[in-house]
Image (cartoon, rainbow, N blue to C red; front, side, top):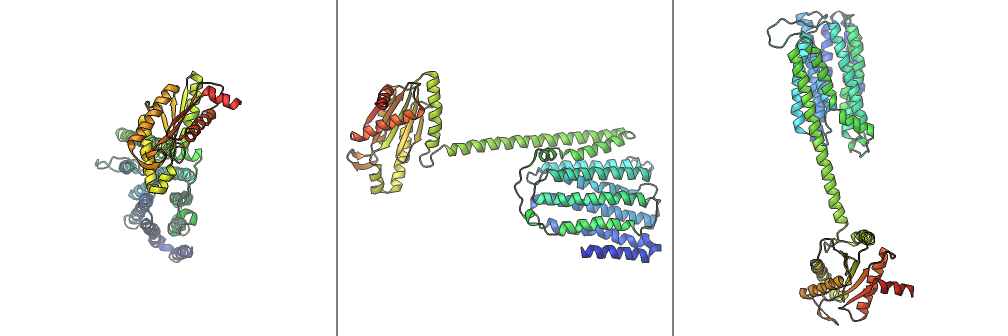
Length: 495
C-alpha cells in the first residue's frame, strides 16, 4: 500500500514538474506498472501447484501484451509522431491484451485439466490476433494492400464492449467458483477488471479530447498497482487449503457455460469482420463453432465417464459393505436384506422358502487349542465348502455369527433342504480339519432347517424356527441335522 501510494505520488510529481514534457516522462511509469505485475505473476507461478499455474501464466501473458502495446505506443508518440485520431499497431496489442484473460475466465477448472484444450485455446488466440489486425487496419495481413486504420472513435467503442464482456464473464465465473485457491485467482482478476474497466472507460474518453496527461495517466497506475499488490499479498487462511463447498444450481450452470464466453467473443469479432472480408470472417465463425463443439463433447464425455466411475465405485463399496471380510461370504446385513426380499417373493408366488443355520461344533475348543489364526483358517475353509454345496446361483450363504453360517434356499421344500444339509456335512467332513471332541477327530457341524410355506407368518419367524431346530441338533448330541416345518413351529408358538 505504501509503495503504491509512493509510486502514484512520484508519478504525479514528475508530471507536474515536467508538464511540458509529460508525454516523455510518463511512459517510464506506464511501462513499469505492467512490468511489476508480470514480476508478481512469475513470483506467484513459482509458488503455486503445477495444476494451478495455467491461470497465472495467462494473466502474465495478458500483462506482457499490454506492456508491448505501451512500448509501441511510446514509439509511435515519441519517434513516429503518429496522429491519435486513428488506430495503430499499439492498439492491436491493447486489443489482444484481453484475449489471455478471457481464456483464463473460460477455461476448465484446474481440478480437471484437459491438455488438448490448451492447443485449441492457442488456435483461437492466433485466429483472434489475425481477425484483430483485419478489424483495426481493414486489410488482410501480408496482402500488400495499404493500411486503412479505423477511426479512434470506432476503436474506443470496441474497447468498451471488450471490457464489458470481460467484466461480466469474470464476475459470473467468480460466482461459480467455490472457495479455494482457484477462487482467489478469479477474485483478484474480477476486481482488477472492474477497476481497469472503469479507469479505461474514463481514460479513453479523456485521452481523445486532451493532451494533458497529468491526471489521466495516474488512473493506469491505480489498476496495475492494485493487481501487482493483490498477486503478491499472502492468501487468507480460508484460501490456503481448498474448502469443500456444495455448489448451487446457479454456480453449476455458470461453470458449465463458462467455456462459451470466449466463443461468443470470437463469433462477435468474426461477424464484424465478415462484412468486408467474408472468407476471413467465415473461417473465424467456423473455427469458433468447431472448437466449442469439440470442447463440449469432450467435457460431456468426461462427465459420463466420471458418472460411470462413480456408479462402479458405489457398486464396489456396496459389495464390500455386504461381504464378510474374513470368509468373503455374505455378511449379516446382506442376509437380512435378502431374507426380506426372498420372503416377500415366496409369499407373493406362494412358494416354499428354506433356511439352514449351520454351527461349527466345539469351535471354541479349536480356537483355544490351536489359536485364533487356525480358527480363522477353519472358518474360511468351511465357508468355501458350504458355498460349493449350494446348487443354484440364487441361493445365499452368509456368515450369520461368529462360527455360525446361514443358507437361504428359495423355492426349496423340506426334502430339498435335507439334501443340501447332507451335502454340507459331507463337504465339512472331507476337509479333515482336526479338532478332537466328543463328535470325533475332525471338525463337524450341526444344522437346523426351517421350511415356511404360509403367508400368515413373518420373515423373522423362519429365523426363529431355524434357530430352534439348530438348538435341538446341539441338544441331541451335535453333528446332526434337525428340521422344523412350518406347521410344527406354529403349533409350538400357539402352545
